Length: 65
Image (cartoon, rainbow, N blue to C red; front, side):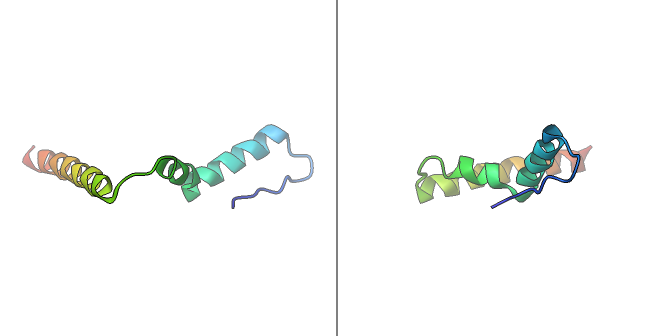
């Protein structure tokens, strides 16, 4: 669990910004989004396969130019 200690004289807004940045770096929000709904193992494989194809297509496009 991410936590931030508020420093002396620090505003709430800056502490909230640090907390959001910490959550984003640790990947907590993406984990929550992934576990929000159940996804079948075959759907996970399909999604990852599509992502891999897009990624390789992007790299192949850059290599040809």
